[in-house]
Each structure stands twice: as C-alpha cells, then as structure tokens.
Amino acid sequence: MTIERIPWDQYFMAQSVLLSLRSTCQRLSVGATIVRDKRMIAGGYNGSVSGDVHCIDEGCYVVDGHCVRTIHAEMNAILQCAKFGIPTDGAEIYVTHFPCLQCTKMILQAGIKKIHYLTDYRNDDYAIQLLEKTGVIVEQVTLDQEYFTELQAIYGGNNQKETNAE
Image 1 (cartoon, helix red, strand yellow):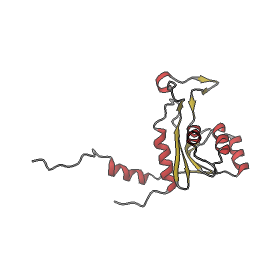
Image 2 (tube, rainbow, N blue to C red):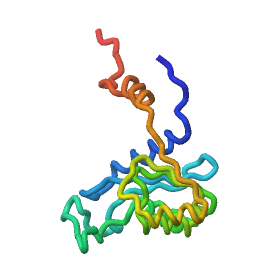
Image 3 (tube, rainbow, N blue to C red):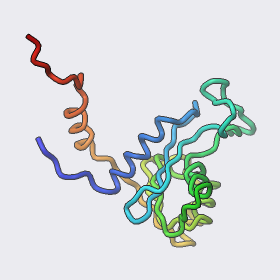
Image 4 (tube, rainbow, N blue to C red):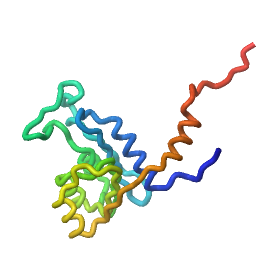
C-alpha cells in the first residue's frame, strides 16, 4: 500500500506533535516548530528553564492559576533561534495548540508571518485581534490519519529483521 507524500502542513505539524512528547509540563504538552522556506529552523516544547527542576519531577509551581516554572513551546523555539543567531523574520510557526496572548505577542515581535495550529486552546480574544490587526495569517491544520496509519503499518510491528537461522 502506497500513499502520496504527506503535505507540508501535516509534515511540520507532525514535528510539533513529536516535540510535544518531550514536554515536562503535567498540565498540557505543547510542541512548536519554526519553519522558513520549507525548512525547520527551530523546535521547542513547554518545560522548565535549563538547569531547573521539572514539573514532572517536582510538581507545578502555580501562581495565580499559571505554572511559573514552565516556558511555553513557542518561546523555547523563538529563544533557540535567538541563541543561535537564526533570523525568524518572515518565518512560519507550527504549534500543537493555539498560542496564548504572551506567545502571540512574541511571535509577532519575532516577525513570524503565519501561525499553523492543531487544537484550539483558550483562544484569547485580544490575541486574535492582534493577529488580525497585524495581518498575520492563522490556519488550523488537520492531521490526516491515513499517513499515520501507514507509518504504523510500516514501522509498528516488532521491527525485527528475519534471519536465516539453520
């Protein structure tokens, strides 16, 4: 069984879903992939500052209903670009969940021109207004299960090579 190549939007969103599996947040696992010219330039997931304890190990540090220990996936991806001197102007971002207000503002300030997201999550009215006002394109991506079923069929077995044991 052969299927067509996975579309770009689903490919990059699948990368974000994979990144979300590294999350150390107990409340919500989020992944983000920044793309420019059909190339991944950074990825991030939500978790603690490097060198700090993780929520999965110590519990969340919640103040006013928010875990202050956690850095959001979008911020981690943008900061990765800053750390390594990678420009984000004109890039696109793929996020597993609709960005919060603070992440939306960072995305705008980083010059990212398009947001692809998988799942609505507490979509902030002001974030939506800012996106509309600045002309940043927002698109919800749907993952086609056919591609992942195919992967499971190809790679999901025991993956052991047959041998000619005598």
